[in-house]
Image 1 (cartoon, rainbow, N blue to C red):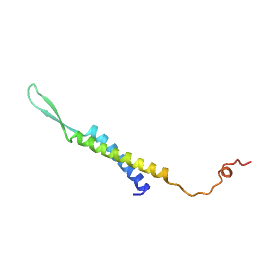
Image 2: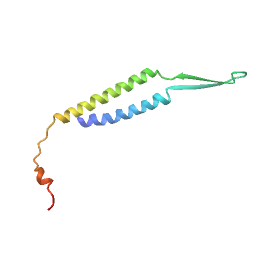
Image 3: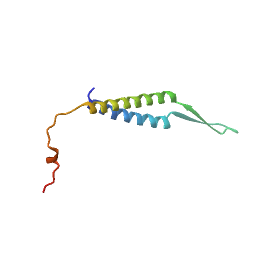
Image 4: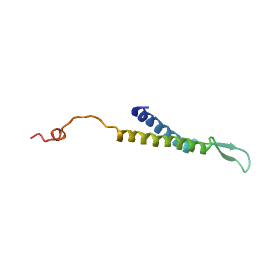
Length: 96
């Protein structure tokens, strides 16, 4: 995988992690309201739609990938040198 591919994949995975975090909070449960007669006129039941442990496991898996990809990109940048001829003093010298 190239560095550009890894960076693009990181962006997509970060988006997916954000989606799963929202999902984990908002739609991981289903609420059912039942209406009856007598003392229990209204009853609300909350059922899990997804195993929260599985959602958390997926988030951790994605975050682990993001860490490893970021470390690999930084390692590649730290060890890659480029050939560039430039006179820094001349380039950064004042106009006068």
